[in-house]
Image (cartoon, rainbow, N blue to C red; front, side):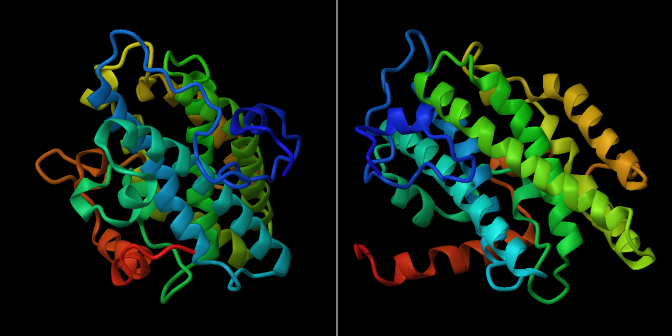
Amino acid sequence: MSFDNAYESLLGHEDAHWAFGTGFSEALSGVNREFPTGVDRDALAAYCLMVGDDALILSQRLSEWCSRAPELEEDIALANIALDLLGQARMLLTRAGEVLGRDEDALAYLRDEREFRNVHLAEIDCGPGPGGDFATTIARLLVFSSWRLALFSCLRGSADPVLAAVAEKGLKELAYHRDHAAQWTVRLGDGTDESHRRMQAGLERVWPFVDELFARHRVEAALTGVAVDPASLRSEVDGVLDAVLSAAGLTRPADRRAARVAGMAGRDGVHTEAMGFLLAEMQHLHRSLPGAVW
């Protein structure tokens, strides 16, 4: 690409399907990297890990559908969404690494399970392996993208210039992710009896992990003016989800929370059984050939 720096590409590219994270070798090249005055840098790094890990882990999950989606166009669409999220993860992990003294690759490939801070919704196994289901993947993408779009809308005003830049660029991508998932939700929910049944079942599978998205963590509470209180997003996200489910003829599942361990969940480094298997696959090559580049 012909951009002089990454910041120009963040703000000026018109292709909603373009994944920032490509076209330049350094993830934050050209972006204002000054730290806001009076902000706890360790807390900022932890928050960037939270938001970055959400994107990284769901990107890995969506990439599992490559060559396995129900039609070629959808195969490409899910791969593009995965790349968008990977681009967001690159920049956020790089920002965290400026404080932690580790680059984006080290944070992605050399952390253990307890060091990851993503929400459980991103990691649960929806497919395409044994028992995997496309409708469940769409249900997760609908919930995740609706929530993340609302989050990024608020993060545009963050006092941290990197978070603000990532959010500004990510809005266009996330709007596409949400619309894509909404279209599939309506198509399946308002389709055949079988597609309706499976779409409803997909919603039931992911719904226990919705509540975690809106639980305020102590890191977010410590970053006034930088982070977003996720509880403030609930009304907007619920409105979007209710509208889509109504159009699809689907029933909103009963609110129920997935079990926690001593009150802890993904933001605290406590994950589901699926996370270990996901990391084993994602990190295998880097750990097997340490220092390798490609």
